[in-house]
Length: 292
Image (tube, rainbow, N blue to C red; front, top):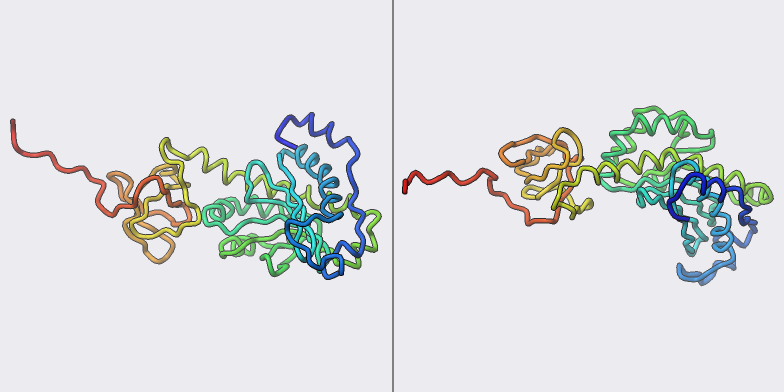
């Protein structure tokens, strides 16, 4: 379902959608998953796609326009719902050997992580509205209860490299015991994460607004090094392009922006590949004293 009007989303939400209808064979580790590859199809991923239509419609109504894809793994199957506004921030329903994991993933990408840090208070407020079962942590560790996390804990987590996960894990036995009525609760669990996705969407919107003419090639994964040509992503010099002259080893950089030498946070910079990095001064060559 592509971006459209909220009215279309409401009409779409009123339709009947598919059911997940979980069975023991849907979870990883069973004989049903033996020899499974990412490209193989299973009855579960088809059911997830049908059920996911309802999720897409409700996210649409919440102002998040997204598309869904079912991904088959050796351990099970995932429904990945990626926002049109920020493909890197996505909500996921994963069915595997450990049970069900409903989550939003905040990727390990420096510029994006910097955006989330600047909006840590908004994220903190969004976490307070989540059900008690939701946790915030890393991809491998469940972490702490999301709604009772402190702002300092949230900021510390965002400041560390690595993917951040906010979500709810349901053990396999619990999921199967409630298989007849868990569909609606899983849908609610994905939709309640919409405010976090909207905060993440602002990262792309902000960066697109700041792109100056002629500078469109950003390598957000490249490290900031001396001599790199960079674009400033936030602050009073947002959108400007310059050259890194020095790094202070404490997260700061001295950047030549034309005739100005600015001291900026590395997290507010992205490498641009539109021109070769140079170390020379940006000052113009003095005019000759010779007269014609």
